[in-house]
Amino acid sequence: MKVGSVKEIKNNEFRVGMIPDNVKSYVNAGHQVYIEKGAGAGSGFTDEEYKAAGATLLDTAKEVWDTVEMMIKVKEPLPDEYPLFHEGLILYTYLHLAADQPQTDALLSSKVKGVAYETLMDRNGGLPLLAPMSQIAGRLSVQEGAKYLEKIYGGEGVLLAGVPGTPKANVVILGGGSVGTNACKIAVGMGANVTILDVNLQRLAYLDDIFGARIQTLASNDANIENSVKEADLVIGSVLIPGKAAPKLFKKKYLKEMRPGAVFVDVAVDQGGCGETTRVTYHDAPIYIVDGVVHYCVGNMPGAVPRTSTIALTNATLSYGLQIANKGLEQACRENETIYSAINTYDGKLTCKNVADSFEGYEYVDVKSLVN
Ligand SMILES: NC(=O)C1=CN([C@@H]2O[C@H](COP(=O)(O)OP(=O)(O)OC[C@H]3O[C@@H](n4cnc5c(N)ncnc54)[C@H](O)[C@@H]3O)[C@@H](O)[C@H]2O)C=CC1
Ligand SMILES: CC(=O)C(=O)O
Image (cartoon, rainbow, N blue to C red; front, side, top):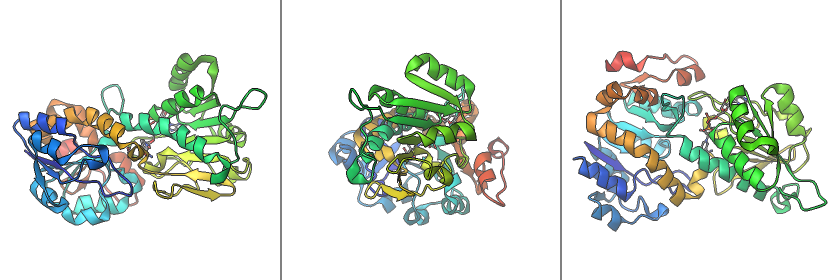
């Protein structure tokens, strides 16, 4: 199969879909690999390394899009990329369609096979292609939160750990999955008081087992969320219902009850955000303030540490990518049924139920009825 990667065009996005070692794996399996010149530079991978691994370097993204049967990306395509779609193309990347109706329409009308990293669910209910970026974003969320608590950024001027004789900061984490657990690890490590809320009580029991008395776990409901965020210095939004738009748990009315200069980091912004006052921001202007509360809502947080992120992402995506390239998408699904869960669009049909439920008037079609 002809596979390839292009330079990401999202604001300050420096990750890349394939590293030179991945190219070797695809070439050894008999595939042809096409890479846009300079695609890996932001993550520290040179054109010479891609060439030495067996890739053909092309001058423009358009040449790569036009050549390949499977495009291996990182971020969802942006409007400038929609005209480059072609029928039957396998697009293997993050899509986050529930937050992006125009992209959904473009994938459907051009009959692209949209294989979304974030909805691929393994047999244990895990999200193996989302988890590595969630680990990174979770860890970064506390780092960024700590920074924006500084006075010069509009923050309340609080140090997470405090010092002897002063209160520690209160960190409240909404959602205790991969992002939440990694945020918790860093916040506990930095000496903050941490409260973590989830609807999944088994998950809370697991978190209680690992962190013990160093954290407070609470069932996620309106009363517990409101009481916790009122006392919070830093709130981290990290809930997910795979494929669906995020529930708006962090309400506008809470902002006035919080301390001026408290910070809200909404990691779930890529699924539309879990705050009523969330709007997408970018690395070059990551914050805005509503009712005194600093909001950080960057949808590609791991792009800030692209070397680590690219290696972590491609560690996870390579094996599924090879299965798809080696067997074709349809046969790969038949032999490994977990891959069905990643297919969000197929032959002009919307094949992820949670995405279809997020929009008015879109019909869901079971992908198995199309593939088998
Ligand atoms: N902004 C960025 O750069 C990045 C964003 N993300 C996003 O972060 C979000 C979280 O991802 P993961 O932690 O990997 O998901 P996950 O599935 O591991 O965890 C989500 C957790 O939310 C919980 N949850 C669901 N509804 C809830 C509710 N009403 N109240 C409290 N908890 C609730 C679930 O039980 C689960 O434990 C996703 O939207 C993901 O796409 C991930 C990586 C980077
Ligand atoms: C998960 C995601 O969208 C990201 O890492 O940018």
